[in-house]
Length: 140
Image (cartoon, rainbow, N blue to C red; front, side):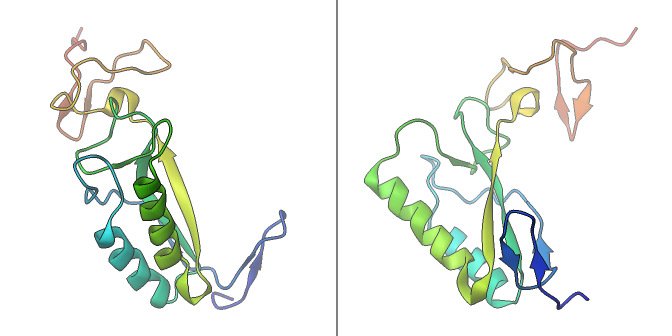
């Protein structure tokens, strides 16, 4: 069963049921671009036989990233950035693997070391998350 193909309702065929879940790599360049380290990592997973490679956090707003080293695709991309993303895609789809990008906006989970003013769809404060303390939170 694990080795059998998976047919999704949208018509996509996945070669097996092995999925590399999203993780945060923290290996992007300082400008948020993907690089050869992403290519090598995702190529290894693809060649290892995974059916779906889900990327780590790819942020849509440089002000609210989950951690330093996240890939950021905000606004118009340069030719260099598009080429880096294409190389990453090529690496992660070898051996008939799929590469699915996890688009992210860290919102209130953005570490204070990156941005002291979080932004989220809720006014409800976040008490503590992995050592990230929301200063607005006060115990009753």
